[in-house]
Amino acid sequence: MTLTLERPTAASEAATAPTQPPKPRAQPEKIAAGLTLVALVVASVLALISVDISLPQMAASWSNAARFFDRVGGLSFPPLPELLYLTALTVGLVLLGTLFAAVFSVPLAWLAAANTSPGRGWMAFARFLGVLTRAVPDVVLAMVFVLMFSLGTLPGILAIGIHSIGMISKMFADAIEQIDEGPRLAIRAAGGSRSQEFFSGVLPQVLPSWVATVLHRNDINLRGSVILGYVGVAGLGLEMSYAFKSLNYSLGLGIALVIFALCVVMEIVSSAVRTVMLGLAPTRRGLGDRMLRRFGVTGRRRTADVPAARLRRPLDYSRVRNAVWGGLALLVVVGSVWICDIQWGDFLTVWSYLPDTAAKFWPPSFGAYDATVMVAAMAETIAIALAATILTVFASIVIGSLAARNVAPTPRVRAAFRLILVTIRGIPEIILAIVLIVVTGLGAQAGTIALAIGGVGLLGKLLADSLEEVPAGPEHALTAAGATRLQVYAGATVPQGMKALLGHSFYMLDTNIRAATILGLVGGGGVGYYLLNAGQGSRYDLVTTIVLMILVTVVVVEALAMWMRRVFR
View 1 (cartoon, rainbow, N blue to C red):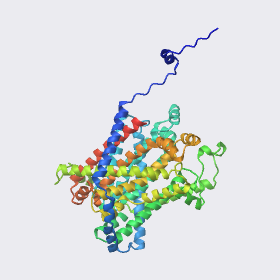
View 2 (view 1 turned 180 degrees about the vertical axis):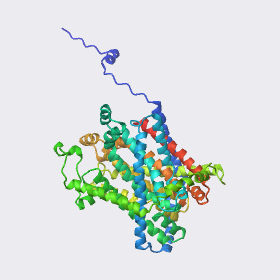
View 3 (view 1 turned 180 degrees about the horizontal axis):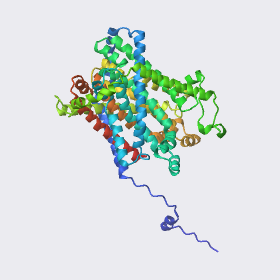
View 4 (view 1 turned 135 degrees about the vertical axis):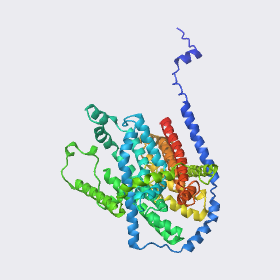
């Protein structure tokens, strides 16, 4: 018998070939979001070009700084008792302002979260309040409260507190929307009230995020408190402003050094407090963790790691230690109230000043300036923010990656770059701007560099934490396949961290827009120069106009960020 082999036809090959899944069609919204992102990057590059940062020119101008520091001579400080009092006063008003924001952010976040808000109207109202409090600079709030209250710490406490409510409530609301709905729905099914749902089914899940956000915001508020001294808020910032205005640069730079050291210490203490409050065992990998180990604090395990038989523990060392920490925290709050010497009677008389104060700020106007001048100044502020953000993003990708445990080649490298990030976060942007103005002169260049350097400390830390939290499966798979460390980083770590990088970058842009306004107060360029002149000249109608311009810009950035997160999730 003869076998005849026939060559398969093209039709039979097509019939037997495995079917390929159809390629997903590009969604128009994703295309629009991608084009918008490209447009923002291009705008940032153009803004960076317009700022005209010249490293050779800065190097040539370094002789200006050398001559300046020669004239300054050595650093000087206030008398030790006065310095200790000013330091305690500054820490006290920052702690009370942050505590004020932490308390009031809870109901605002509950209303703003989609899964807990009573209705869409309440959710829109709460989110608008959050955007409004974030958009109004704390220095403007301090101007208002200085007019309404007596001079002292109360205007600073309220300004820091109200400005911080927006950011804490935003982060808190985002955390609420990402909870496991099971416990909350179980409480509802059992007939629990809304308050029981929140305090028993929601708050325990988001408490670690809330604690971390509040402590992080406290560090930011300490750095931001420096600028409040320029509008009359008591503390180290006020004394530094007096020193610089009287050309006593030796004393001004000495106080600036004290503020830097205080910020670094606060960063370390916050890390230690976060470790203790969240119940994490120290790992010897962080600066605060090493301090806890040194002082014999070993931390406690999470409830999930504790056997069921030990859920009801007797009064042991761990519980006593936690009670001591809680008592110390209470003493710190009481001490802050005492050192700030709040005039509680001002809350009874402030209402009589409210109509006159509101009349000074409304209606808004451009004052003696032309509208085109103010629009150009606001455009310069936005350009400074964009240029600083793109510089921050590129620098943070390098520094933040080397500060991540799963990217750094050795633990020593990671520790070194973590220390760099802590040091950078300890330097207030306004102090950076003042030093850079000496080198580069007044203008946008100093403000951009100051924002870029200060932003690396924040964005680098956020990026490092995000990279450490990516799923390890893809990284292990590439490593098992023989990929190099760089290939694992580019093929698994970065793609998983891109969404976090996008969100953090928009947060950085939002922060830089407000910070660029503040740096204009000390000559960093942009609309802040006009804001300072309007405040000192009692042209509060112009202050309102500038605040409205900032509000519109922040709302646009917030809308873009929400849209990008929704499209690329």
